[in-house]
Every structure is written in C-alpha cells, then in structure tokens.
Amino acid sequence: MSETGNPPILEVDNLARHFPVRGFLNRKVGSLRALDDVSFAVEPGEILGIVGESGCGKSTLGKTLMGIHEPSEGEVRMLGERIASPGQKRAPKIRARLQYVYQDPGASLDPRWTLRRSLHEPLIIHTDWSREKREEKVREIVKAVGLPVEHLDLYPHEISGGQQRRVGLARILVLGPELVIFDEPTSGLDVSVQATVLRLFRDLKSEFDLTYLFISHDLAVVQSICDRVIVMYLGRIVEIGKTADVFAAPRHPYTQALLSAAPRIGGPRVTENFSLQGEPPDPSNVPSGCRFRTRCQYAISDCAEIDPHLDDQDGHGVACLRWRELSA
Ligand SMILES: Nc1ncnc2c1ncn2[C@@H]1O[C@H](COP(=O)(O)OP(=O)(O)OP(=O)(O)O)[C@@H](O)[C@H]1O
Ligand SMILES: [Mg+2]
Image (cartoon, rainbow, N blue to C red; front, top):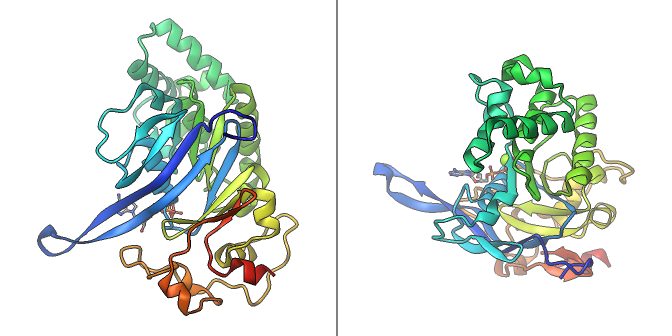
C-alpha cells in the first residue's frame, strides 16, 4: 500500500528481458541482459523518473512494461491484474490504460496521414465509436494539448518537432489512459520548447488525472519534474528514492558519478574524484558480483563476489555493498 492507502497503479516484480546474441549460422551464442531483476511500484498520481546512461535498459524497461517485449522473467501488474509475464499471450483489457510515448515522436506518426487520420486511428482500433463521436474527442484532446484544430488537416512534416510531441501525446490521450510512459520526451527539442512541453505535461497530468513514468537521460529535467527517480545501470536498478533525496545525497557511487558529471539545479559542483570513466561493459557479458564494480573507484574484492540487492531505508534504496560505510 502507498502513503495514500491506495494500491500501486503498477507493480513490477523481478522483471528481466534478455535478448539472444546470435553468432555463426544464426546460432544463439549467448544472451544480452538488457533488463535484470527489476522490481518497483508506481504510486497513483506520481511522476517516476528513470535515468541512466545510454544502453542501460531504460527503453527496454518501458517496452517490457508495455508488452512490446515479452518478459524473460518476472511479472508486471496493473491495479493488481497481471499484464505481462513470460508466455502470457493475451493482454487483459486493463492494459489499454497504460500507454507508451515513443522516443521518436515523428516516427510514430505516419507521414502519409493527416494528423486527423493519425488521431482517429487509435479510436477506430480500440472503440466502436461513430465518426462524429471520434471527431469530437479528437478535437477536445487537440485543444487540450495546445494545437489549433485547423492543424488536423496538416501532415507530420508540416509541423514542428514540439508540435509533433503534442500530437504524439494527443494520440494516446484520446484513449483515456491512466499511466503514461514517456521515453525521452524532450530529447531533440531546444530548451525553450522543452520548457513549454514540460509545462504542458504537468497541466495534462492534473487535467486528466494521470500518472507518469518518465524516461530521460536529462537529469535537470528529471530533477525539475519527477517526484521519485530510479537510477539504472546495465539493466539493474542501482538506486531508487525521492528525487530530492537522491539528488541531494546520492548513495550509489554510480549515481554520485552521474550527478557530478551533469549540470543540475542547485547541485554541488563537480568533484574531481567522482568522475565516470570509460563506457559501461558489454551487457552480453556482465561482470560478476556488482555490475558497476569495473568502473567503481570504491570496489573491493567482495564486490566481484557478491551481487548487491537493493537495500531500502525509508523509501531510499541502494544496491551497493559499501554504501553505509561510504556515506559515514
Ligand atoms: N530488440 C533488441 N534486440 C537486441 N538487443 C536489444 C534490443 N533492444 C535493445 N537491445 C539492447 O539492450 C540494451 C539496452 O537498450 P535500451 O534501448 O533499453 O537502452 P536505453 O537505456 O533506452 O538507451 P538510450 O538512452 O540510448 O535510449 C542495449 O545493449 C541494446 O543494444
Ligand atoms: Mg532508450
């Protein structure tokens, strides 16, 4: 149960997604662990951020929650009902209440279709509404996302990147979702447009009573908009907590390095000893023990032996053997 006494809107238990690695003659020679043993819950009405370097599994997490990828292990429940697990073929109806906004909004709009057609399409698929009823809904949502209804006759290439985001969002809002997963919703937008789009997200959230999962590598954006944040490294959650707590006092050496490398609102300045060097290891060949140890300046021999689990203290979880000792 959450602080509000309501059940979590989404529960994720030991979720994993492995992709086969193929070699000569397309034989499976290994597996790429894009997501491993990921557990968390999303509370109704919150904005939960997901951060981490490129390739750490953020989009894979979003797509596995959505059922675009089948989980290799674990399960996902929405309002108590199982919506994804290994081998689960049929999506229960409740899954329509979870929607995903793709990393590239332009790519999710058909270039040959007018915006009107793109916006009617999800309603044609998911409802049996009349054309008039659909058009009414489409107009309502288009106005809500701040686009003039005259734009409905335009094609995607005739509108700006910021407007494409609005259309991408409108496309899912017509379906009346409760939980929206945004994948890098502000990437590729210039700063002033970013600010407008973020304000729009906030307004729509209260107008439509939404809960957000917000995937982004932009820490300043996450800090400004998210209530809680999950930090991922090589397919794992290494830290989770209230955004204010994590940003003020990061517990995991990876989070410390990540935060010190990026400009933040009111954050302490970069300290020399916390720098993130090199690239993350190959996810098809993850290090033993702690996955971060090969880049961690605090790693000791135990870190190669023991795979640290998330140690949760007052809602602030960290997966590091040494975090208590290091923060003392
Ligand atoms: N369909 C797929 N088949 C095989 N491997 C994949 C597939 N999708 C993702 N991967 C691999 O899984 C790992 C995680 O990728 P993912 O796209 O989830 O990362 P990300 O955190 O979203 O990165 P970015 O910040 O660049 O968007 C990467 O090593 C990627 O190459
Ligand atoms: Mg991604």
